[in-house]
Image: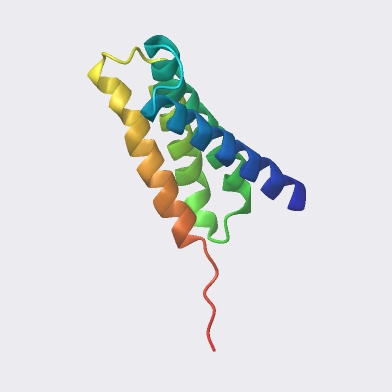
Length: 107
C-alpha cells in the first residue's frame, strides 16, 4: 500500500510538471503539446489504474478502471480529433471517484 501511494505520488507530480511545462511554454510548441495534452493524461490514467484496486467502495473499482482507460485512450488519439476529448471526461471521472473514496472523519 505504501509503495503504491509513493508511485502514485511520483506519477502525479510528474504529470503536473508536464501540464505546467505545456502551459508556460518551457519547450517548443510540439513538445509542450505532447507533454500537456498527451503525456499528462497517460500518467494520470496510469495513476488511476494503480488506485482502482484500493478503492474502499468496490462498486467504483471498474468505474476507476474506465476513467483510467478514457484518459489513456483519449491521449492516444490525435489532438485535432474531437473524440480525444474523452480524456477530459476520464480525468473528471477519476477525480470524482478519488474524492468519493476519501475516508470520512467524525469527531
